[in-house]
Image (cartoon, rainbow, N blue to C red):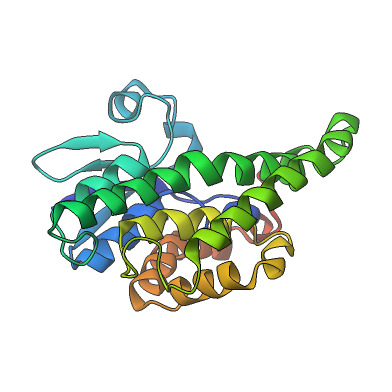
Length: 226
């Protein structure tokens, strides 16, 4: 049985963003069952977990054949054996891999820098000074991305693929802002992806332990950790 590690709970701002959702979504699209192994923050530094994930992050993945970490690599591994996530022809596969890496390397760093400022450093003077420039760079990259999408529904060959899992997840990390509304084709793209039943199942499965933890400890819902 496939096993994916995930957190028992994260603060509200991170819910729906933790990267195990990428792997959950890929498995759902591929029609593959899995178990989630839930870990707490206290488990991240243990030798046992670091043997699976050297940086103490989630997800780590095992399927009886391989053990992996890094969500992008895991999604690519799953996609290589799934017609739902990657076409059979070499040209199609190459385009999926190209856009998958574009999501992580050409788009995500800009999104992540803004999120780091907004979610962790908003009150710091350096962040206030840096933010306008970061947002300007991000908007330029989003404009390029929207142009590349054009009038297609999906990025690689205009069919849903593993690349769209990564790209959608990256763009969803802007939902604490109104920036994506200024790029209507990208906003529609994210909405299309989020409407997929496989995404809805993946999101619900990630959120389930968070809701259970908050029901047991209501103070967690406000992001307070005792």
